[in-house]
Figure 1 (cartoon, helix red, strand yellow):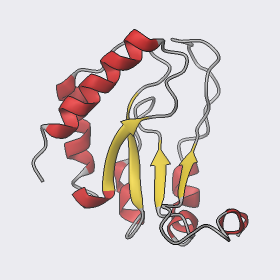
Figure 2 (figure 1 turned 45 degrees about the vertical axis):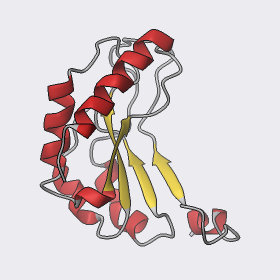
Figure 3 (figure 1 turned 90 degrees about the vertical axis):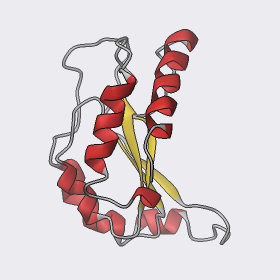
Figure 4 (figure 1 turned 180 degrees about the vertical axis):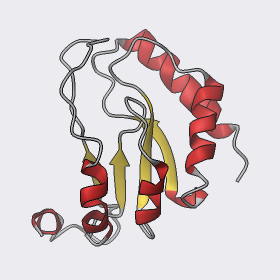
Amino acid sequence: ENLDRAFLNCPDGVTRTAHMCCGYPDVIDAVDYPKAPRESYFQIADAMEDSSVMALSLEDAHRYNDLSLLEHFKTTTIIFGVVAIAKSRVEAVEEIRKRLMDALEHIDANRLIAAPDCGLGILGRELAVQKMKNLCAAAHSIET
């Protein structure tokens, strides 16, 4: 209800987008920083699907979700986090590609957008660029 109010006077041509954050560390490679419980996405998935949000950003790289979660979204586009934003390890193209292919077993390709989990601010430019290059290569390698 409050989310719909936030978009109340949003023009028709604007894609109403929301990010469901699970937590954000203050340093790179932090261990055991506070995250939302695993079941949180499932608890609000149906409400998000029924809201005015058209695209929803979900974090998946930091901790893989049960991909059946994606089946709750029948019309909502999912911006799917496949690159961790708080780890210095650069995900391999094939690792990202596999996760996207697994996700495509649960959602239509035209409603899945590959993305980082969240903002890349703590990574530094070089590391962020490396991760984004691999994300792009993985996404472009998938034929739809």
